[in-house]
Length: 305
Ligand SMILES: Nc1ncnc2c1ncn2[C@@H]1O[C@H](COP(=O)(O)OP(=O)(O)OP(=O)(O)O)[C@@H](O)[C@H]1O
Image (cartoon, rainbow, N blue to C red; front, side):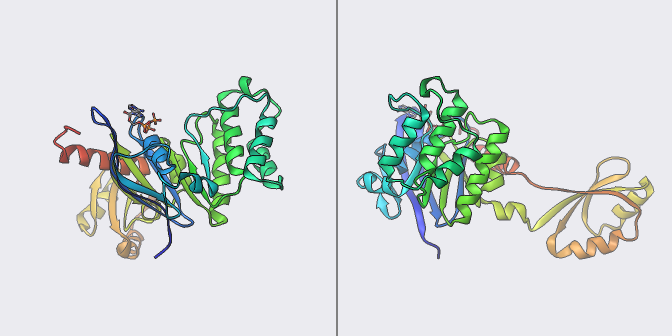
């Protein structure tokens, strides 16, 4: 069993009127990149702030590196790089001044990694802190957090304000963190970026975890869905009549086929006897997984969710 770096159990912070987070159970293992997705106001920040020890839960516990989030928050901070959802800088003039102050606070003396992050994010730290755009502020906060090279990263919507190119650069940084064996917990409402870098993901809705999924399982499903286009309609008909696979007609010459991994060989063997002009695999996306967990939960709760 791999080490558990972040754990919440029964975490509840009730703000009243069904707002807050309720009975949150999460376990993040060493070296894992763990995504936390949910719509606006679903409870991502409340969960993260509870983990960091900034919020005292009504019930349940959170721990990071085995330290209790509420009573040992200061010790947790020593080993965690944290990017908050709402960035507030101290009253300093430039980004450089802020980064220097942060380096002193974190005891950073080798600036090689900090410069690497600055370069990758194409940040000009000499800019006036107050006049920085939202994206520049976000980049500055990322540099300030990552320069400490801590083994655990807790990031609350770290790509907010970043343009698509910079989001990709940021995801590259996360991949590098993963390669170093560091543990990352990041929230987002952008499914694609979670899908691109995470090992596992928890989905939260209205303060409740509705599903936890392994991205490996999502990328390597035990059942595959194909859309096959035959050269002519009679070919498609002939295939459907074999009834060898779960299949349904899509349009004149195409059909959708559902195939278990262990039947793949048999399917391709069978298709050799047909004139095929196109074959596509339909992957289930994280967003589709979220939507079906969401609908399932609505059904279970009788739409009172
Ligand atoms: N201090 C507070 N007092 C009262 N309600 C709060 C407080 N903080 C958060 N909430 C409510 O708790 C719920 C969860 O908020 P939270 O900020 O954790 O969501 P989020 O998933 O991070 O949202 P977003 O994606 O919009 O940042 C929301 O309904 C929010 O209005």
